[in-house]
Length: 305
Image (cartoon, rainbow, N blue to C red; front, side, top):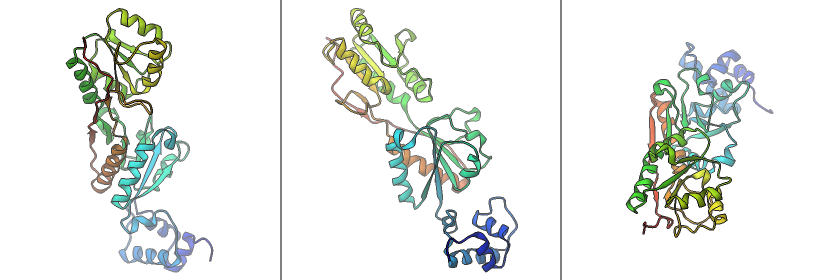
């Protein structure tokens, strides 16, 4: 009979198309509706094989949305893998929304709740009460948006303590130029003297590194985004690691030798975000969750002679 429409369901169930829309939409607006009517609509939809994405809700099989402010599969592969694994474990289905734009609020309502990756995202535009979880720290007044994030501050403080135990006192911190919440948390964890913080995209560093060696600097701490260009600059300056200069990274570079630092638990963040969204959908109550970053020993920190 071709694609089944809501008008077909209304005809079989003996109700209006508006009633069918309310039932299949989960009756989010609280329309007074007899239970016998709701069940009649669902039975008709099942008999006709109606393939509405919201039909999963009627079996208690929640549909969770994902929306990324940046290209999701390019920037968030590990997080997406964790989201998929945990959704499967909890019996949830997933739907991907493209970047926010016209009709975004209406589109997200296809899902019971939505996960947001990256930022900025227009979560403030969502109607009050719609379940959302942000992957990454949010800083709205009152902390009203539930989020999960890595504990960058504690992990960064541990890296600095590792360098201190190895005798390093003169340290330069190469910070990514962007003022993201994660960058601010890493800098807070380092607790560095502002004079030792260098905001850089990693370019034109070789000359600076030679100058720092002359000033007695014994270690570099670099943000994850700056690590690869910093390594190139060290090679260009003919500086050996850790012979001439120790190196630690706040995170882990995408490739190359293992550098002392910590692991960002991206897959675990995805899984935890799904668990938190399931809790928000079920109870309406959200919270903030920080995940520990496992240390990476590496071999790029040497004791000061």
